Image (cartoon, rainbow, N blue to C red):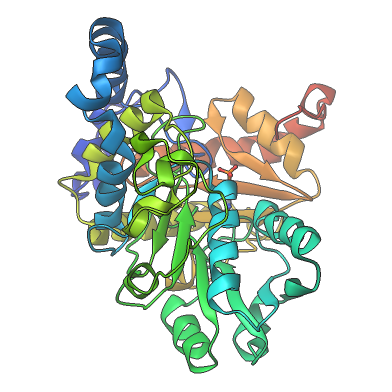
Length: 412
Ligand SMILES: *Cc1c(COP(=O)(O)O)cnc(C)c1O
């Protein structure tokens, strides 16, 4: 082990952030795009919520510790990192459930139009949620899938909403949100953006780009822990124009007066109407604490480092002559990428397993891609250099052919 600091880490304005995370022993973690690392400050905050809030104050904590407002207060914290003014973002449920809500809202606002337009390699849950709504609504909803390249020109007068993930989960390709929004608006279509691979990884400008709805995860680049609740954003014009409930999951906590226990549903004003049931307080507390790690960082610095790490990864792979054998399927230009790279190889699954056995956690995406995620708050340039060295050795020795690396796990 060398103790010298890598020159690129010396110049990194975010280098100090790494110390805020628990880095698992002997591990280079390059999977923050699936599940971010835990910060001891989050651990402590959750412990405190367990011991003192739940333990000592029990049910009084709904008021005393503001549990009831957590979806809104945490939502506002997320809002600051995705270009959303106060009161437009709420933290609740899963991304999938939130997609259901905003898809239904868009179909209702744009009544008379049936089509949800999306990309054929969008993340499956996004497409499944539309398919479920198709099943439910019959002719009032149809899903149309096109390639990323033809998305903009495929919007037409029957498109109720364009459903798009800003950064493709496989390739890391980033689609231009401003162009999409402009084109959609011109043709009367609404925009629904999935920020799963954007939030916490790059600057997002929901209001400036005039996006109608957005959803995203907190367990990826926001490091809020496994299964932590997702977020949902709604543009002000839709919240203000509300004459009837915007989404169909009428739950008591989305009611205007939940503790009146009225028989009939009446939606709360503003973003709260997107709530359904009781929030997962312990997980929300984790989101709250995890977001504090972003309080003193600029998303511009985060983006710069993300690009720096990815470019350095490519440079190291080039130096080891790995790119011919396992070509990148990610865009060559950094501005057209999110915070990940993907490489194609027919043995990608086994290569990933061999990397994991060698202390480098990356992930595999079907059918044959090795995916490397860069989390700018805790990854270092030294890690990139070392991980590519290990990859080069695995490839040189063809270590991935070992049968133990060929065995597929349930979660890949
Ligand atoms: C990770 C991810 C999801 C996950 O949705 P959940 O409901 O949290 O399981 C959704 N969409 C995209 C694009 C993702 O990458």
